[in-house]
Length: 158
Image (cartoon, rainbow, N blue to C red; front, side, top):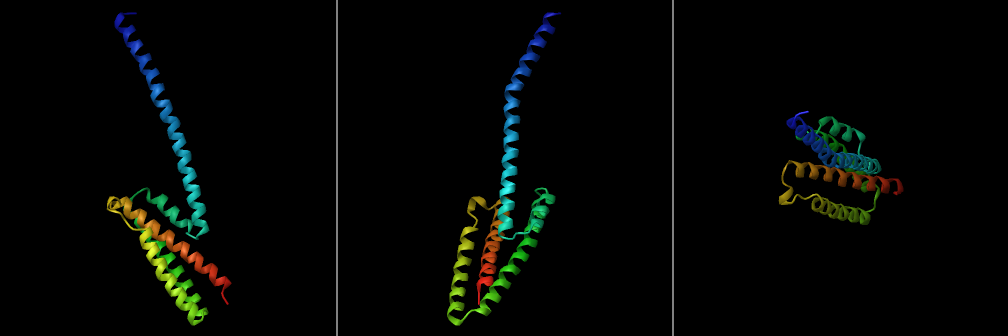
């Protein structure tokens, strides 16, 4: 074997060993990240079910494949649904209350709107596309939570 071939083999072996040192931890990290992403997804789905966000939103987002335009369409469809839920529950609950409780509910709703707007406000740093999507998801989530709360109160109302 020539000296050039021997040097090439030494460099190749060294490169493979280094590759093992660099790539193996990266692969392990990727597997860990994948597990973390799956856990986050499962957790989000459980939370969404609890507050009655439809699974079709997550299905739509998965099909959108991180396309901002399509993601926004998914959020808009769910937002319309959640706004109908909250408005219907509020209207029915309001009709079942006496004058004093109606006033309390109206004030409570005004306070909730302030909370929702504050919770979902965009900071200057979040003003990009990702921030807008996060805000839309926040608005949907907060609206779904409130709709679920009002629906629960409906079942306990007179």
